[in-house]
Each structure stands twice: as C-alpha cells, then as structure tokens.
Length: 486
Image (cartoon, rainbow, N blue to C red; front, side, top):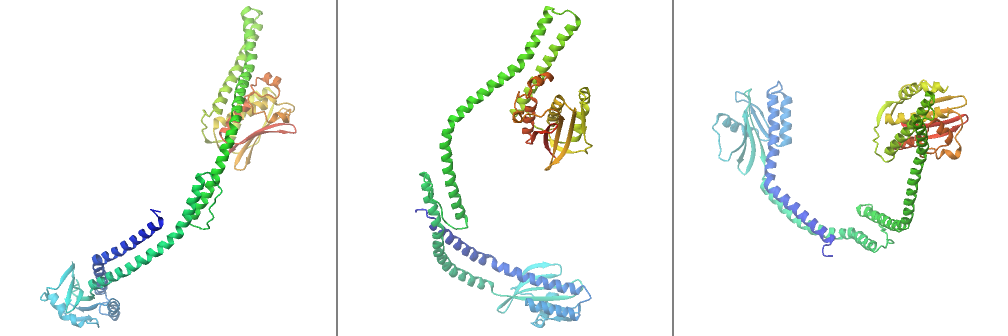
C-alpha cells in the first residue's frame, strides 16, 4: 500500500523519538545550568533561615544549634562561618569554615571585592553571589542579621556546562541507536496490528457485494477486537435489514388492506354518530312540529313537549362535547399537565357534590376514612375519569343500591376503585367496553341518556398519562378502577 499504516507508525515513532531527544538536548543546553543554580540557591536559603531562626531565639550558641548547623553542612555540602557583633567567631564548619573568617570580615567592613564576583540577589541583610576561588566556582551568601550576627556560607558549583555537554553527547548517541532500534521494533509490531485490519477490510469488501457469510474470528481484547465484533454485528444487522426490506415489500399489500379497513372504520364511525343523532333529532323535529301545529293546546302538554325537546337537545349537546373531548385526546391535541394533588380530597369533594343525585336514586355511598394521599397526574382529567366511573355506577346501581369507593396502595401507586351493586357485565362484552358507542344494554343506556363515549374518554385519558385502568365483575356487582402514580 502507498499509505501503509506500518510505514506511518514507524515514521511517527522515529520522529517522536528524535524530537524528544532533540528537545532534551535543547533543554539541557538552555536551562540545566539555571535549574542547577536554582537548586543550590534553595539550599543556601534553607541554611540562612536556620541561622536566622537560631539567632532570633535562645537556641543561638547552644550545643543543639551547633549540631543542627553541622547537619546542614554535611547534608548539603555547605561551608559556614558565623561571628557575633564583636567579630568573635561563634561557629565555623569543619569543612573549611575557618578559611572564611577573613573573607567575612572583609565583606562586613567593605574592603574585600573581586571582579569575578557576580551578585545574583540582594535582600534585607544578605547578598547572594557567584564567586571563583582558584579553579573552583562557588555560590556564596553573606550578610548581617538585625541582632548583629554576621555570617557567610558557600557551596561549590560544579562545572554544569561541561556536564550538560557530556549529557547531550550521550543523549545523541543513545538517541540514534534508540530511533533505529525502535523503528525496527515498531515495524514488526505494526505488522501484527495491521494484519487484523486487513482482515476487516476483506470482510467489508464482501459485505459490499452483499456476502454476509465472512465473520471476524480474532480474539484480541483491544479496539480492533471491538471493531471486529461490531463488524460482525453490522453484518448480521444488514442481513436482517435486507430480509426485513424483502418482507416489507410483501407487507405493502397488507398496508393497502389496512387503509381500506380504516376507511371502513371511518364510515362506521360516521354511521354510529348518525344513528345516535338520528333519534334525538327525530324526536325534536316531531315535538317541534306538534307545537307548531298546535296539536295539544293545553299548558301541560305544551310544557311536556318543550321538556322533551330540551332533554333531547341536552343529550345531543352532551354527546357532541364528549366526542370533541375524545377527539382531542386521541389526536394528542390536549396537553397533559402533570401536577401533585390530594386524590382523597378530589374523591370526597366529588362524592359530596353528587350527594343529591345519589340520594334521589336511593343509593348508599361508602367511602373509608382515608388520610391525604398525594399523586402525580392531570387533576382535571383524573376527576373526569372518576366522574365517568361514578356516573356509570349511579346509572347501573341496583339490588342493594350500594356504591363503594376505595383507595388502595399498589406498587408505588394508588388504585381508585368504584364498585356498584347490580347486574354483572357479560364476559364477551368486557373487551368492548372501551370502544366508542359500545353499549351493553342499549335500551337502558337510552333510558338514562348515555352516549357510549364515556369509557372511551376514560381509555384515552389513562393512555395519555401511561397509567393502568380496568373493570372486573364481582359476585354482587361490577368494579371499575384506575391507577395513579403516588
């Protein structure tokens, strides 16, 4: 290959190695001497702080202070000489401190200067400088403390430039060998790395021609192994997708049939709406014509005719409102506003507002003494669900004429149940209860003005909140329930 990864790996490695070595040589040449001087200066200042601390305390002149200075001199290779305010020697290190006495006196009285001296820092009561004595070079600090104590200390500076030059030569020789040897090693290592990549390339070429039989068999636990596993998954996914596409072609005809079914459902819906509206419209028209023609002129008959017209108009209005609500819910036009509220208070308030209706029908309502139970839901929609259940219970309540409402905790939620005594729902009708316009007993539904849409609204509301709902027959009646998140 013209742009082989092996060649690129080898060149990159050699370039990085050569660049690193050149950078080390450059840093040695430019900064090693400064770094070395900085380290030696820190050592000098550490010794200075030790002397200053001792001079400012009662420890000065004690055996402990002397031993401390001896330790500093031996550890950091520093020569120290200290004099008091009367120029009497108070401490001199054993590694040449006596030789610094005359020099310290010369510094203090200002008659000892040398052109080889190079001042590096001057502070409050001290001077740091580089000096040369014979063939050797030193880093030196001298000064006088506020207490009158004078001091001088020096530490030798080795020929750092010569050392840096030697180190640079060593880096160069080692670097050349390292670059060549590393290039050979990386060449063979890259061959091992690129071999599975070439295998993956061959597999991808087969996939281009829709041949999905070849699979990557490598056992590497690195990125290439992961890539191989993903190539295998991609191959299986493409094979499955092509199979699904072929299957989808066969499904097109079924989609056409489904479209025809939807058209039929739309026609059926219109027929159901027309059927539901036909009877009240006919009644309104008939009684209105009767009023217009004056069939019965007595006030009681006229009032009866008017009541029938208003009653049927009210039923039509109620059904249209429910259909509009159902349409908004089913097509997602109605926003679900999740909020935290007390479901116990909601149930109690509604039962209290419906007390006149239940009393007129001779129904006893049972509700336990529940504490406040807070749930997350759309409060308005939750109330509408409960209202539909409760109104159904009132309309179908018979026998003992009893309605029992309960609030039970289930799996982090609350189940609201509305039970009424009366006839049980036929088993074959339970699965159709949530369908629009479905009525178990059409005559009775007509009697209390039901439209067959209420439970469809319940279904749409509960689906919009992704919560469960249902119905179950009991021995002496029917129980509808729905669940909310606690």
